[in-house]
Length: 345
Ligand code: KG4
Ligand code: ZN
Image: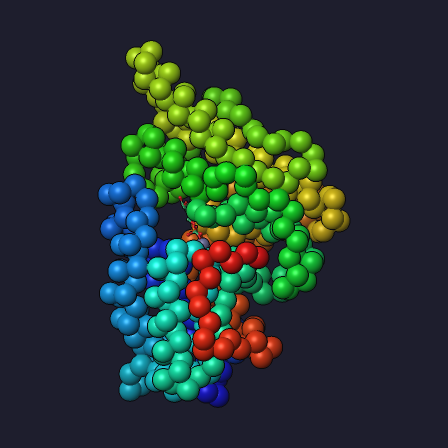
């Protein structure tokens, strides 16, 4: 209680994650139990499997985090007791409803039994706050790009909690496009890490894939045309009996996606006059995207922050960072809250 430890739970998609953070933002535990292997054979996340797996592992992931926190604090005598926590944070949404419900129901019961307050967190705000784990002095106003498996948005962060979404995707999310392209090539799930590994040795100029909605002032995104172009290219090459050069395909696909991301971010920075930029979500783990933003925006005097690699894909550390700050401001949630699968920023 003295250390004001906040335990946070994340279960919006296919990772069951629990983190414990202290009042100063030190991460004392950061457990992630991934279900990827159970979903990979289906080529994507199966909601029903996700819910069941969360139920199976959530107690042991919380226990492991309580043990890690005790070890981080150098305490002998085993795990931190729930009564020693100051608050319990949890992802309320957006995400898969059945997956969210497991985390929210568990967090409510756990917090209530321990006599501790509950703090609900927006998963998208979590991806934004992942940047604070790398750069604690990041301060609004700035431009933020969220690129995950479920979301693609360009956001003007005017103040903490004051978000103007400048544009979103009209169809597929960026991570989803990576997953679909990898699937079309029979390369497995999730596609992001596979494509980015292949792209390392490829020529980004080999194939000229389309860049959608590429006019200035338009902050909307569209990925489905690109996905179709890649699929047609694969069909056409296969029909002609040519072998597809996977690294070139991967690098050219990435270039088409990231050129658009860069241009829209640059335009938004100019239009708003912001001098800071950050990025988040699973796709922000991509080394080419990180490097491109750091180098090209950096050259224009923009300070670029990227989250630690471990905090790009879903994790509870970023949820703990949001919960800690909300708890400090007294933003407590009632015990009758429900999971909200359609939450927006
Ligand atoms: O943020 P996240 O873990 O889950 C959501 O909230 O959606 O994002 C998962 C997405 C997947 O589509 C995955 O393919 C993508 O992030 N991803 C990547 C990379 N690592 C993960 N995309 C591109 N390059 C990567 N290195
Ligand atoms: Zn996410």
